[in-house]
Length: 150
Image (cartoon, rainbow, N blue to C red):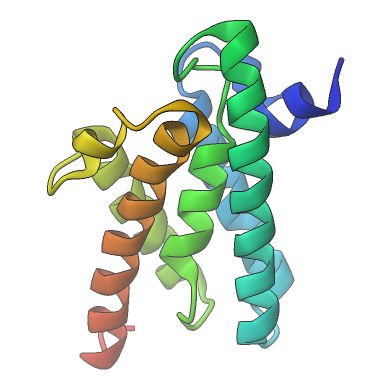
């Protein structure tokens, strides 16, 4: 299999026909927790998020030529969106699970201009809606952290 397809499918998670996006976001949350729960470096968090986003833009663009527009197989967008949702948030089980739930709600329902971003061309359209869903999730998480909910 080609590198772009491996990345686009989130190391193969995208081949799960039903729930691949949810599984990719959950795996991302677990990996994020394992990487950053012992103490987190915001610079490393940003670097991981930027790399996932850049890889997503590249691989989603290429995958679209093989599988069509926004194929269920492409889940790197969920990985990048989940990374955005967890940026600059203390890494605990509660924050990761809450970030996951918020992200999936925004990603599935697509309110507040999220759906509109899907119409952007190529890999940008695949990635942009999930990045905005991640941003909305992150803003709510930040507010919850400031309110000392966690």
